[in-house]
Image (cartoon, rainbow, N blue to C red; front, side, top):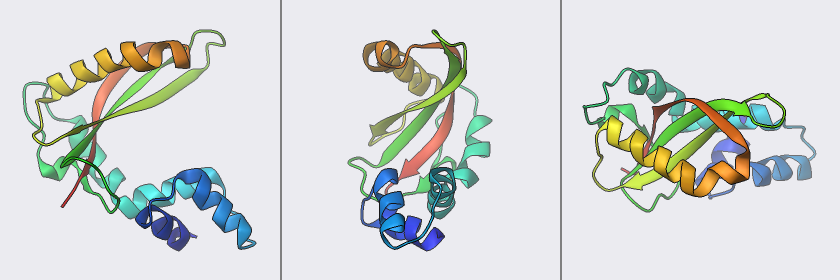
Length: 142
């Protein structure tokens, strides 16, 4: 199945399309397995642990990002992961905010922009109370 996920990301398909194509071919492909395969294909999980250790006053380097096989508009796409709880149900939630840059700011500036963007775009839509957030890496265009 990883070949379907890799091909799907290369041609620009989203997660739902990849799963739909696998089903169309008569294959069962759980969404969670597909997302894991896509992350492995893109190298996202290799970049994440190193990104978590960067102090806020430093700029991340290309080694903290996975090379992107799909099209991103700018040179870098940074990810900040928010963790918290659903306001209504109390269930734990995570959500990742992606931002694109040609020149990377410091980790602290990345996180500040993500918090601002969270308030403008995501807060009302997700009903999530934030407990923690951190820069987790991202992608770069070669």
